[in-house]
Image (cartoon, rainbow, N blue to C red; front, side, top):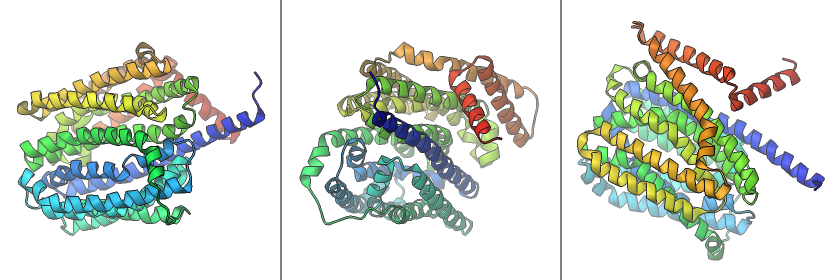
Length: 493
């Protein structure tokens, strides 16, 4: 069968968009997360753990509201093969209605949230943060359209500008003794800046068009995505809810900072891969062989980066915390070490579920998420009386069981069996463990300067890992080296 020039051109165009998308999604993630990382490190040095704990108490409510704000229709717009201006306007106005409803709901439930945690200051904090839903609702459609067109270059610019501006405002507030309101200011200014920039960088403008039929056409897919997102968000933050209720704000502050540190590399990797692969996978959803090939490549890439980062973070947890956050945050070290095991699994889990989302199998996606959340519920019941560390161990067990289940059902859909996927990542895992053992051996030398120790561990860890990948000819590493050599040669460098 001879391929038509038109099909080849479309294929090349999609590949070019995919490569550009990965590059700019990486810039976006590194820029946004890098700026956020620096800002939160500075704020953590100024503020107290209890002040971070107060914001963490509200995280589950704000995050759930954010899911309702999207309502599944934004994701449905990306997954839908063909959309029109009626679809876009209907989603735009529906998002604004959701934003207003959420603002009113949280305004009146703020006293209940305050009584739940027995923290009077949460009333005003909740009401101020709830206003961001109205702000956010005006930018979701613009963000979705840029994401659908794989225009991650503009998204990267917007992210970096908004994060930088809001970070400066938050740091100035912290230095001027605004305490917890510095964290509120960071969130509010960030969201407002993004919405303004979305409108400046995107020419789309709403018309006075609204169609229930248009929303109905996306409802079946969107409602399942909504339920999946609600489950994911609720149970991703349920430990903050439970720990905030049972322990002190300071304890929650330690746990939330440990969780954030672990998530910085993990969410960067899974976020980049998910944002780029979802629209691309959605376009080739009917070509299962291409989907499988794309999934294999994505899984291998995620493991290649995630495994050494998480194992390295586990081994270097203590000097990392002292250098970045100062010794007042040392109680979070055991939490961070345990959470690194979740970091090994999370990106792989996210990528597998992303495939089910892209082929439109939202019902199976919802059932898998529901099963995992039931397991989390039982894990909390079993472990909550025995302390935060045991609660995290229960969390690890649930993520591992959920990952195995997801592997099985994705394998059924794409003929990508469990053992085949494990085979694609096991070598990288073994080499990462060897690297971790090597880094740990450095701690046997009595180096009391934490800055020097961390520098040595990171440098020797990276060198040993890349050397091992070269010796054992890890495919994704060798491909990256060949690609780098090719580009250097083509640019005469």
